[in-house]
Image (cartoon, rainbow, N blue to C red):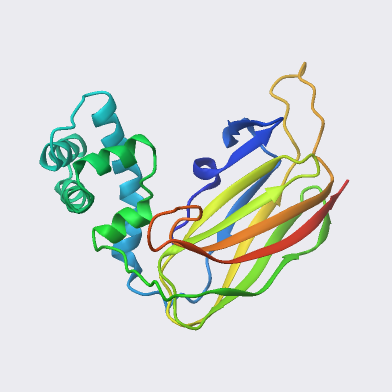
Length: 255
């Protein structure tokens, strides 16, 4: 199963300021792939489209802002194909652009409002299930308490009666100091059934960058965990996007 790494998606909020996760946070979040994913619904093409569209959207934005290519869908998507040396990316771009129109396409790109799942659904490379559903059966931490250095596991399961569209499992953790970090994991479309998900949260000591730096050590206390199980991209207002369910749990880190 494809998953997106912490470095790409996580931001940490410190004193009301949003900063990139590369400034070191005292834990990492990583999905543990299930042993059995046989019920995924033709995920390979969709998954690859979403992966490639992330970079394609960035290239398109640069073509618009830096090179001023805004004439037509053919001009813009042709430039994308040339820039990336990928006719496939250009073809997908052309399908999406023609559906929404060049003006709306550019507006979505300029407002960073073109999420990859919806983009690939418009291109007919990802399935759509507007009657899908998913609900957490259980959502808890293993263990619930541990010392600094413990690997905690978010152990959860969800059930679906009508299957799901491609979506996301978005995990947000709030520290005892009220700092937060989030990570989004891509979920393939599912058939009706029950699905287990396990997310590893690895805690570790902070590292000082030099002997003169002050290091406060790992913050102990209660960490609150919230998970959003979404159809499409969590937080998207585009069609075929919604929140199926929300899970809450917590874990305690001791010295």
